[in-house]
Image (cartoon, rainbow, N blue to C red; front, side, top):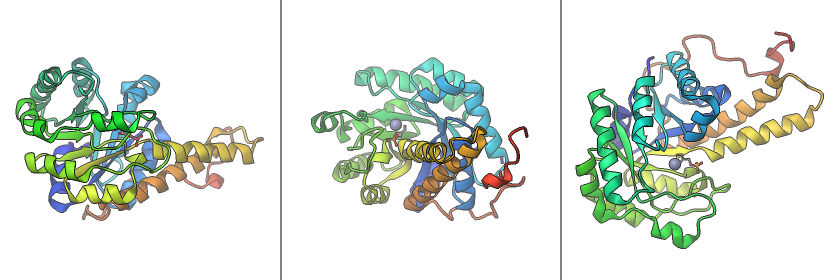
Length: 306
Ligand code: G3H
Ligand code: ZN
């Protein structure tokens, strides 16, 4: 089906108390891994394009891959800009056909964050595209516990932030940290509850979920988290499987032979997260690929000259 926006997805998630997985994809194999897992699990899914993905693949390739994957599945797929850095980039993504945007003004003073978030929302809404904004700041690996604490979203700012920006969903800093290599962080559920109570209609977004304890993620979904962002956890699976394959088969020169197990490893991690988020089985209609699924077995690839 064509790309869908995150608007209906997140509303359904809010109502059904599940979360939609938002997975970062940097190449064709990752896009396939994510969409195939979502298709098999009958789950809506968000594919997000980060700043790094835009630098690596270019916006047209990054968006094009997701559009092709969406066209070949019956589950809803949204194409989302992750951590959009400025107004212009958000507008360029609108032109490219993104069906969900993010303006991340978390490094800016609050008032500036509000002003630019509002400008992005105004223009995106004309095109019927929803926008995620960020309150507080989800920091990166290396931040101290005190820095993480100090950067958390303030519940008392949430209502005005949503009123003034008109944002459709809100990423909130509640204790997660980007790019952690193991699941160690615990979320501040009381803070989440206070934010949810202040803005009960706004779907809330969890960033940096790779490093959050699974019980804590599951609990947060019960209190308003409707979109959960996962990147590092998938990259780890992909890279480690690639490394294992290269180590085990140093004489195999066909990169596809190594990329197949990498794609499979990432896919199984997407599947596990979809089940944790409770979005599996939420899409009723048949599902499945309209065209034949991609080959998964190394034996199916054929010779290197193919
Ligand atoms: O915006 C992307 C995410 O917040 C991913 O964070 O790599 O820690 O899972 P992660
Ligand atoms: Zn993030």
